[in-house]
Length: 274
Image (cartoon, rainbow, N blue to C red; front, top):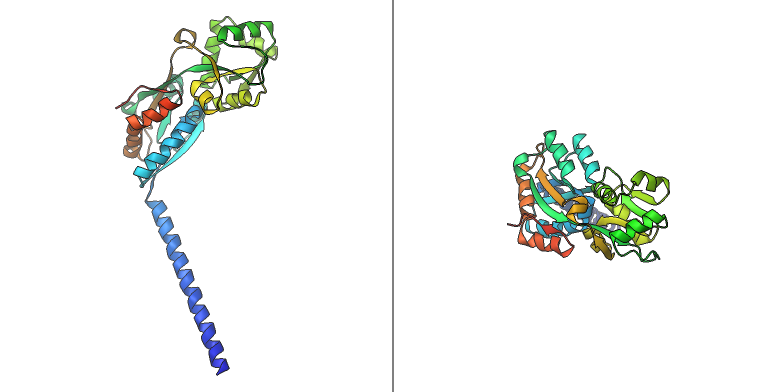
């Protein structure tokens, strides 16, 4: 009798284990099927859009459960190079026209979808621990001429760096001379420049107004159009996109009043509201 009970117990345990395994397999299969059912849209976007696009992804995906948004944030120049080298991308949003123009000239974008999405401002921000007393671009110029500050700017292949070069030229400042004098440090994208200001490793830096907002940095001054031109963010669906219709749909969403409110909250000016 004891032997029979032991055998019965073993059989019951085995049955339970097999049932659990079957349930686990079913759950895994369901999860995989759910993931497989989603269409992945890959968006390459300027680093200065990180916070806003991540926020918008939450609301968009909640109302479009069949869509998965995957972002690649970096400098527009780096993203342009990646696209030219064959990286998978459905939608590109640049922080300047130059990079988008280059891709258009190379036949990489669907020109019918290209539009000017947003406008930003180039901002001068001073580190909280700086004793420079800088309150404007003119103050920045005076201190650079004196050689008594350290300023962070973007590399020349980064849009914010290109805008900065125009500002330096506007004030007749020689970037090469300033760099050789040890007055400049560089960042490979606007987030790196922002970090240097926030961490207080420099006296000041030139970034976008939106990045200043995201990093809780006070803006001392913003550049006028005469100083560096307009800061326009163009967007376009890629010619090689595998999901053109879905990429167009998300680009349409970025032009809605709902998306515009998110952009405006951090300092962007929407240019294509529908």
